[in-house]
Image 1 (cartoon, chains in turn brown, blue):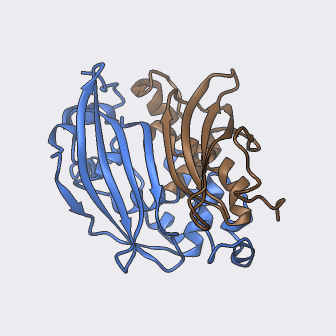
Image 2: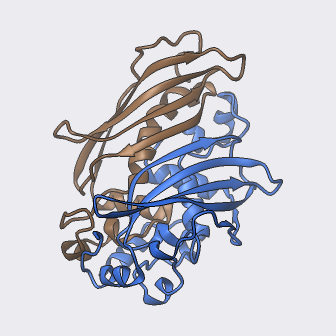
Length: 145
Length: 192
């Protein structure tokens, strides 16, 4: 189990451990099969050459996979101590073409001492591609014991 | 080998194997609801239910991928303070695509759809054995920079009527059935 993270031990400005993930077509297909999102913009390379939904002739990662990996920054940090996501708002800024490598991170920006079992922190979240461009930003509320 | 045959290699769960996966199939598109048909304010309780099995929850975490053992090991999850095996926070995606196959809510399957962002709220953990249902309400639709947006409210309930999660989901969609059919043929048809 991870070091004992608690609401009391967290400070504004604390950075969460980053997650880095390369996404090739196999990874996109695996996510599609498990999320049941078979939209061809993610899965059909030949179709994407002409349909170009995002103005690109290649497949792109699912937006919900980007959100899932942003959530993974939180699950890796808070879930081993019983923490929970209670709210997440994400804006997907740029499409992530197949064969991208993105980094997902977060920082604590607010502490809300509501009461035992209800205390929560607010995080800023981001995802950047291999060129350092932001592909998604967001905020999250996470309850901590 | 076509892309659907390639993808079939990764299917593990019963729901994955049973799912009708060809989003370009003309017969399925005939059952969709298109941007220009969406009634704002209309509420729908989706008839299809989703019975949660451990294999569904584990498969979602694998597909992220997220190797955190709280998603795979019930005993470990309990030691961490959870009340059982944990569903990945975005597991609801699988639930939504499983139940939203036609009519109101089928927008998520539309060829040409884009996802500009979501707001998600969680109220009660999803547990193995839950039978989940979804209520939808068209919240807003608008045209911006030549693109057709819509936002809907999605609420997920369990078999006891407990609210599990709520989402404000935004999509950019092809405007009409004709535009979707152009996408099916591999033509770009998103802008006004």
